Image (tube, rainbow, N blue to C red):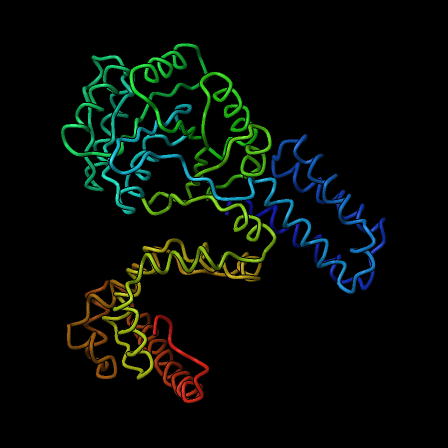
Length: 447
């Protein structure tokens, strides 16, 4: 997560508070001084930091907190509530018209913020919720942007409307609207041109598009890696054309992430979505409460559950639970689970959503895409019989599998050994779970 460094610092600060049986006003103010430095280092706007620290301090030095049995926990609770308030309190989705009418979302922003990629991700997200989206290429200054939108649309099976570079963006927007009316689309996403810097020509193009078609929602796409510049860009765009919300991209990147904590307070506009990776499903609704929990090391179990539900259907989950209960899990199942897990995202990111786990992962060696692919190559070198009967894979078979996968036989031996140990553990766990089931205290997930 982009705010990992901030999260680690805040958790260290509050760990020291929790270790004290009683807190004095001086303890709270000293901790808040450290919080202030941590926020500034995370590139949070200095005015936002000042207001945040003042709000927390005012609430935390009250007698209800200082004289409570768990003053450290009370301070953390206050910080959590103020972080949520800082980032907008509630989820704010962009306004759309009823499905029977055509909604138009205009994406704007500077070049390099990720507008074109985000346009395709947004279209995929709305399609999954029942809309019929049309992507419209309005960046007439960069033929590469038009081609990129076409490629992204083709990958996702979403139609892209384009008239090339020889027409004004406003005319393309009008033609896209007419095309949508004739072909049953009820959502148009306009991918507009950006510049390296804000200039009058870009703003005028956007104003012309607004005059040509009725815009339902104006969403600004900003790069979280630009820090305070992202906040400044948001403020300028809102002043020049008026925006309804922000999409923050690259929040999974190597960035201090202060924009996520600053934009709402500075601009008064909500963060609607955040980009947490390159895949279409990595565009997520922004939940202020979940982000606050992750920053404070409390995890984000709800998002983890939602990712699992999106990747797994109930039938396959039931079947897998049944196989695990009988220790019948084989290498075919491993391949299936690996594919499902990859849909959910990066493993370290997923584990970081578990309460208390994120900080422990810092120096841990997590399986990456390359190591998972290596294991899959070994499994794919097995015959169908071998994948279904792991216990029957003898020495000669292991040599052939190693040769086919291009690995040393020791890697094949290690995989088969680990797999066998996992099955034994599943069998032991299923026995314990079976006992609990008889008392009605345990059920397999989705059962």
